[in-house]
Length: 313
Image (tube, rainbow, N blue to C red):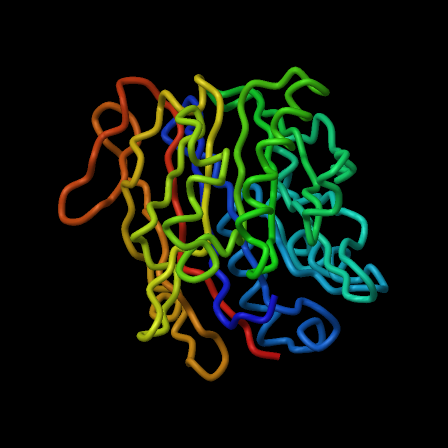
Protein backbone atom coordinates (compact mmCIF):
# COMPACT_ATOMS: atom_id res chain seq x y z
CA UNK A 1 0.00 0.00 0.00
CA UNK A 2 1.29 3.42 -0.92
CA UNK A 3 -0.45 5.69 1.57
CA UNK A 4 1.97 7.77 3.59
CA UNK A 5 0.56 7.33 7.05
CA UNK A 6 0.65 4.00 8.84
CA UNK A 7 -0.38 3.67 12.48
CA UNK A 8 0.91 1.77 15.44
CA UNK A 9 -2.07 0.34 17.27
CA UNK A 10 -1.75 -1.23 20.67
CA UNK A 11 -3.97 -3.63 22.57
CA UNK A 12 -3.33 -4.31 26.25
CA UNK A 13 -4.21 -7.51 28.07
CA UNK A 14 -3.76 -7.05 31.79
CA UNK A 15 -1.90 -9.64 33.79
CA UNK A 16 -2.29 -10.55 37.46
CA UNK A 17 -0.03 -7.76 38.65
CA UNK A 18 -0.29 -4.08 37.79
CA UNK A 19 1.50 -4.69 34.51
CA UNK A 20 -0.15 -5.20 31.15
CA UNK A 21 0.63 -7.21 28.06
CA UNK A 22 1.05 -4.75 25.22
CA UNK A 23 0.00 -5.97 21.78
CA UNK A 24 0.81 -3.66 18.88
CA UNK A 25 0.11 -3.36 15.18
CA UNK A 26 2.66 -1.38 13.18
CA UNK A 27 2.74 -0.75 9.45
CA UNK A 28 6.22 0.39 8.50
CA UNK A 29 5.81 1.58 4.95
CA UNK A 30 8.00 -0.28 2.44
CA UNK A 31 10.09 -1.97 5.11
CA UNK A 32 12.88 -3.17 2.88
CA UNK A 33 16.54 -2.74 2.14
CA UNK A 34 16.60 1.07 2.08
CA UNK A 35 15.12 1.34 5.59
CA UNK A 36 17.29 -1.48 6.79
CA UNK A 37 20.34 0.56 5.80
CA UNK A 38 18.98 3.77 7.36
CA UNK A 39 20.36 3.69 10.89
CA UNK A 40 18.14 6.52 12.13
CA UNK A 41 15.00 4.86 10.80
CA UNK A 42 16.00 1.52 12.33
CA UNK A 43 16.67 3.16 15.69
CA UNK A 44 13.14 4.56 15.73
CA UNK A 45 11.62 1.24 14.66
CA UNK A 46 13.48 -0.58 17.43
CA UNK A 47 12.41 2.03 19.95
CA UNK A 48 8.79 1.52 18.92
CA UNK A 49 9.04 -2.27 19.10
CA UNK A 50 10.45 -2.07 22.62
CA UNK A 51 7.21 -0.48 23.76
CA UNK A 52 5.43 -3.73 22.96
CA UNK A 53 5.30 -7.31 24.24
CA UNK A 54 3.81 -8.57 20.97
CA UNK A 55 4.00 -6.51 17.81
CA UNK A 56 2.61 -7.18 14.38
CA UNK A 57 4.85 -5.61 11.75
CA UNK A 58 3.37 -5.18 8.28
CA UNK A 59 4.59 -4.26 4.82
CA UNK A 60 7.91 -6.10 5.14
CA UNK A 61 9.52 -6.25 1.71
CA UNK A 62 12.56 -8.40 2.31
CA UNK A 63 13.35 -11.02 -0.31
CA UNK A 64 16.59 -11.90 1.50
CA UNK A 65 14.96 -12.49 4.91
CA UNK A 66 17.37 -10.18 6.74
CA UNK A 67 15.07 -7.72 8.51
CA UNK A 68 13.81 -9.87 11.37
CA UNK A 69 17.23 -11.36 12.20
CA UNK A 70 18.64 -7.83 12.24
CA UNK A 71 15.83 -6.68 14.53
CA UNK A 72 16.55 -9.60 16.85
CA UNK A 73 20.18 -8.54 17.09
CA UNK A 74 19.22 -4.97 17.93
CA UNK A 75 16.49 -5.96 20.39
CA UNK A 76 18.36 -8.73 22.18
CA UNK A 77 21.90 -7.38 22.06
CA UNK A 78 21.53 -5.32 25.23
CA UNK A 79 18.33 -6.82 26.58
CA UNK A 80 17.78 -7.47 30.26
CA UNK A 81 18.39 -11.06 31.24
CA UNK A 82 15.40 -13.19 30.32
CA UNK A 83 13.56 -10.44 28.43
CA UNK A 84 14.42 -11.53 24.91
CA UNK A 85 12.41 -11.20 21.73
CA UNK A 86 11.66 -13.92 19.24
CA UNK A 87 9.63 -13.79 16.05
CA UNK A 88 7.46 -15.72 13.65
CA UNK A 89 7.04 -14.57 10.06
CA UNK A 90 4.83 -15.39 7.12
CA UNK A 91 5.90 -16.39 3.66
CA UNK A 92 6.06 -13.62 1.07
CA UNK A 93 2.45 -12.80 0.16
CA UNK A 94 0.89 -10.97 -2.74
CA UNK A 95 -0.07 -11.19 -6.35
CA UNK A 96 2.38 -11.10 -9.23
CA UNK A 97 5.81 -9.74 -8.31
CA UNK A 98 4.72 -7.43 -5.48
CA UNK A 99 5.15 -9.25 -2.17
CA UNK A 100 4.90 -8.39 1.52
CA UNK A 101 5.24 -10.30 4.79
CA UNK A 102 3.55 -10.20 8.18
CA UNK A 103 5.78 -10.74 11.21
CA UNK A 104 5.03 -11.04 14.92
CA UNK A 105 7.81 -10.12 17.33
CA UNK A 106 7.21 -11.09 20.95
CA UNK A 107 8.87 -11.30 24.37
CA UNK A 108 9.57 -14.96 25.09
CA UNK A 109 9.31 -14.52 28.83
CA UNK A 110 5.72 -13.29 28.63
CA UNK A 111 4.14 -15.19 25.74
CA UNK A 112 4.72 -18.13 23.45
CA UNK A 113 3.36 -19.23 20.10
CA UNK A 114 0.93 -22.10 20.42
CA UNK A 115 0.32 -22.47 16.69
CA UNK A 116 0.56 -20.51 13.47
CA UNK A 117 -1.24 -20.93 10.16
CA UNK A 118 -1.06 -19.30 6.77
CA UNK A 119 -4.68 -18.89 5.70
CA UNK A 120 -5.43 -20.06 2.16
CA UNK A 121 -8.03 -18.11 0.25
CA UNK A 122 -9.53 -20.99 -1.72
CA UNK A 123 -13.31 -20.69 -1.21
CA UNK A 124 -15.37 -21.84 -4.18
CA UNK A 125 -16.71 -18.86 -6.08
CA UNK A 126 -14.88 -16.43 -3.81
CA UNK A 127 -11.21 -17.23 -4.23
CA UNK A 128 -8.28 -14.82 -4.01
CA UNK A 129 -10.10 -12.01 -2.22
CA UNK A 130 -7.13 -11.10 -0.03
CA UNK A 131 -4.23 -9.16 -1.45
CA UNK A 132 -2.16 -10.61 1.41
CA UNK A 133 -3.81 -13.55 3.14
CA UNK A 134 -3.77 -13.37 6.96
CA UNK A 135 -0.94 -15.13 8.77
CA UNK A 136 -2.81 -16.31 11.85
CA UNK A 137 -0.99 -16.84 15.15
CA UNK A 138 -2.33 -18.39 18.36
CA UNK A 139 -0.53 -16.99 21.39
CA UNK A 140 -0.63 -18.19 24.98
CA UNK A 141 0.54 -16.67 28.24
CA UNK A 142 0.57 -17.95 31.82
CA UNK A 143 0.23 -14.36 33.06
CA UNK A 144 -2.86 -13.04 31.31
CA UNK A 145 -6.43 -13.48 32.50
CA UNK A 146 -7.25 -14.48 28.94
CA UNK A 147 -4.85 -17.42 28.74
CA UNK A 148 -4.72 -17.73 24.98
CA UNK A 149 -5.82 -15.62 22.04
CA UNK A 150 -5.61 -15.74 18.26
CA UNK A 151 -4.38 -12.71 16.32
CA UNK A 152 -5.54 -12.34 12.72
CA UNK A 153 -3.59 -9.62 10.88
CA UNK A 154 -4.75 -7.85 7.76
CA UNK A 155 -3.21 -5.32 5.43
CA UNK A 156 -5.70 -4.58 2.67
CA UNK A 157 -5.40 -2.99 -0.72
CA UNK A 158 -7.46 0.22 -0.42
CA UNK A 159 -9.64 -0.40 -3.48
CA UNK A 160 -10.68 -3.88 -2.27
CA UNK A 161 -10.99 -3.13 1.44
CA UNK A 162 -14.73 -3.88 1.68
CA UNK A 163 -14.37 -7.40 0.28
CA UNK A 164 -11.22 -8.12 2.26
CA UNK A 165 -12.65 -7.00 5.60
CA UNK A 166 -15.83 -8.99 4.93
CA UNK A 167 -13.73 -12.05 4.16
CA UNK A 168 -12.29 -11.96 7.69
CA UNK A 169 -15.58 -13.56 8.76
CA UNK A 170 -14.64 -16.64 6.75
CA UNK A 171 -11.18 -16.62 8.32
CA UNK A 172 -12.80 -16.57 11.75
CA UNK A 173 -15.09 -19.49 10.95
CA UNK A 174 -12.24 -21.52 9.49
CA UNK A 175 -9.84 -20.89 12.38
CA UNK A 176 -12.46 -21.48 15.05
CA UNK A 177 -13.24 -24.85 13.50
CA UNK A 178 -9.56 -25.67 12.91
CA UNK A 179 -8.25 -24.75 16.36
CA UNK A 180 -11.33 -24.66 18.63
CA UNK A 181 -10.13 -21.28 19.85
CA UNK A 182 -12.47 -18.79 21.55
CA UNK A 183 -10.68 -15.43 21.80
CA UNK A 184 -9.83 -13.58 18.58
CA UNK A 185 -8.16 -10.26 17.83
CA UNK A 186 -8.37 -8.89 14.28
CA UNK A 187 -6.02 -6.00 13.77
CA UNK A 188 -4.01 -4.11 11.21
CA UNK A 189 -4.21 -1.66 8.37
CA UNK A 190 -7.75 -2.28 7.09
CA UNK A 191 -8.06 0.96 5.11
CA UNK A 192 -11.49 0.91 6.72
CA UNK A 193 -12.58 4.49 6.23
CA UNK A 194 -13.49 7.38 3.95
CA UNK A 195 -13.83 6.54 0.27
CA UNK A 196 -12.36 3.05 0.66
CA UNK A 197 -15.23 1.94 2.92
CA UNK A 198 -18.12 4.39 2.49
CA UNK A 199 -21.05 4.30 4.92
CA UNK A 200 -23.30 2.39 2.54
CA UNK A 201 -20.72 -0.42 2.30
CA UNK A 202 -20.78 -1.41 5.98
CA UNK A 203 -24.00 -3.38 5.53
CA UNK A 204 -22.04 -5.72 3.26
CA UNK A 205 -19.36 -6.50 5.85
CA UNK A 206 -20.28 -9.50 8.00
CA UNK A 207 -17.61 -8.67 10.55
CA UNK A 208 -19.48 -5.42 11.15
CA UNK A 209 -23.16 -6.43 11.05
CA UNK A 210 -22.64 -9.33 13.49
CA UNK A 211 -22.78 -7.69 16.95
CA UNK A 212 -20.57 -10.41 18.44
CA UNK A 213 -17.62 -8.74 16.74
CA UNK A 214 -16.65 -5.69 18.77
CA UNK A 215 -14.95 -2.82 16.94
CA UNK A 216 -12.73 -0.88 19.28
CA UNK A 217 -11.94 2.03 16.97
CA UNK A 218 -14.98 3.99 15.85
CA UNK A 219 -15.67 5.21 12.34
CA UNK A 220 -15.22 8.81 13.45
CA UNK A 221 -11.70 8.26 14.78
CA UNK A 222 -8.91 9.90 12.81
CA UNK A 223 -5.90 7.63 12.39
CA UNK A 224 -4.07 10.13 10.21
CA UNK A 225 -2.31 13.40 10.92
CA UNK A 226 -2.85 14.92 7.53
CA UNK A 227 -5.03 17.96 8.12
CA UNK A 228 -7.05 17.32 4.97
CA UNK A 229 -7.79 13.72 5.97
CA UNK A 230 -9.99 12.36 8.77
CA UNK A 231 -10.24 8.60 8.32
CA UNK A 232 -10.30 5.55 10.59
CA UNK A 233 -8.14 3.38 8.39
CA UNK A 234 -6.64 1.24 11.14
CA UNK A 235 -8.77 -1.01 13.31
CA UNK A 236 -8.88 -3.53 16.14
CA UNK A 237 -11.82 -5.97 16.32
CA UNK A 238 -12.48 -8.57 19.03
CA UNK A 239 -14.52 -11.76 19.09
CA UNK A 240 -15.01 -14.03 22.11
CA UNK A 241 -16.99 -13.54 25.30
CA UNK A 242 -13.99 -13.74 27.61
CA UNK A 243 -11.95 -11.13 25.76
CA UNK A 244 -14.88 -8.85 24.95
CA UNK A 245 -16.46 -8.81 28.41
CA UNK A 246 -13.55 -6.85 29.89
CA UNK A 247 -13.55 -4.10 27.26
CA UNK A 248 -14.94 -0.59 27.46
CA UNK A 249 -15.15 0.26 23.74
CA UNK A 250 -14.16 3.58 22.21
CA UNK A 251 -12.11 4.74 25.18
CA UNK A 252 -9.38 6.40 23.20
CA UNK A 253 -6.92 9.23 23.54
CA UNK A 254 -3.93 10.64 21.66
CA UNK A 255 -0.24 9.93 22.06
CA UNK A 256 2.06 12.05 19.90
CA UNK A 257 5.03 10.00 18.71
CA UNK A 258 6.71 12.95 17.12
CA UNK A 259 6.63 14.97 20.31
CA UNK A 260 7.64 12.02 22.49
CA UNK A 261 10.64 11.12 20.35
CA UNK A 262 11.41 14.69 19.20
CA UNK A 263 11.32 13.65 15.56
CA UNK A 264 11.13 15.95 12.56
CA UNK A 265 8.32 15.62 10.05
CA UNK A 266 10.90 15.19 7.33
CA UNK A 267 11.96 11.87 8.87
CA UNK A 268 8.84 10.57 10.56
CA UNK A 269 5.25 11.47 9.79
CA UNK A 270 3.12 10.59 12.77
CA UNK A 271 -0.56 10.13 13.18
CA UNK A 272 -2.96 10.11 16.07
CA UNK A 273 -3.24 7.12 18.30
CA UNK A 274 -5.36 5.42 20.88
CA UNK A 275 -5.30 5.36 24.63
CA UNK A 276 -2.61 5.06 27.27
CA UNK A 277 -3.46 2.83 30.25
CA UNK A 278 -3.60 4.22 33.76
CA UNK A 279 -3.81 2.42 37.08
CA UNK A 280 -7.36 2.53 38.40
CA UNK A 281 -8.85 1.35 41.67
CA UNK A 282 -10.60 -1.54 39.96
CA UNK A 283 -7.83 -2.50 37.59
CA UNK A 284 -6.59 -0.76 34.49
CA UNK A 285 -8.18 2.28 32.96
CA UNK A 286 -8.10 4.20 29.73
CA UNK A 287 -7.23 7.82 29.45
CA UNK A 288 -10.00 9.38 27.40
CA UNK A 289 -9.45 12.93 28.47
CA UNK A 290 -8.92 14.53 31.86
CA UNK A 291 -10.59 11.63 33.69
CA UNK A 292 -9.78 7.93 33.35
CA UNK A 293 -12.52 5.36 32.79
CA UNK A 294 -12.16 2.28 34.95
CA UNK A 295 -12.25 -1.14 33.43
CA UNK A 296 -14.62 -3.61 35.08
CA UNK A 297 -13.89 -5.03 38.50
CA UNK A 298 -11.42 -7.66 37.35
CA UNK A 299 -8.31 -7.42 35.23
CA UNK A 300 -9.20 -7.78 31.59
CA UNK A 301 -8.38 -6.29 28.24
CA UNK A 302 -7.57 -2.69 27.49
CA UNK A 303 -7.22 -1.05 24.13
CA UNK A 304 -4.11 0.98 23.65
CA UNK A 305 -2.57 2.62 20.63
CA UNK A 306 0.43 4.88 20.38
CA UNK A 307 0.59 7.08 17.33
CA UNK A 308 1.64 5.55 14.08
CA UNK A 309 4.56 6.50 11.98
CA UNK A 310 5.76 6.57 8.45
CA UNK A 311 9.51 6.38 8.47
CA UNK A 312 11.27 7.94 5.54
CA UNK A 313 13.79 5.98 3.61
